[in-house]
Image (spheres, rainbow, N blue to C red):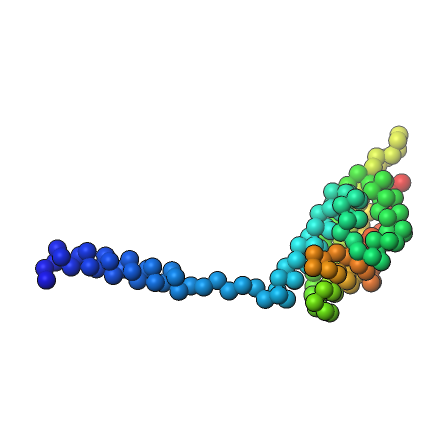
Length: 164
């Protein structure tokens, strides 16, 4: 065999090898638990984003009973959003616990920073901060927040009166 007739065979062999290698890599799907954790992380991120947008309606849709039925949560958020020009929340997940296939406990740290609305004719106060640790309980296939134990970011104790 001469060189000119072996070149196409070499190219064919290389192409065939690449095709076999590409087909041999299989994607492994995430386990059901890993998928649930991913959905929980997305739900926590969505809670944080809607808190930062001050979107009380969307926040309420991310809550499940009994928390969704607690008037104190809605009242505290309404009061805070009415008096603050902006609110910055940050939720940092420390640990996720699978309690059963539809219930997850999330241990997290949170911080809130509220910028008060300017007072009429007065000096605007600086920002107020609050921080804490909480245990969130999320339920459902599309996880929604059902309970908060510990320091609640939905009724925060600011380091000083946050707003005039």
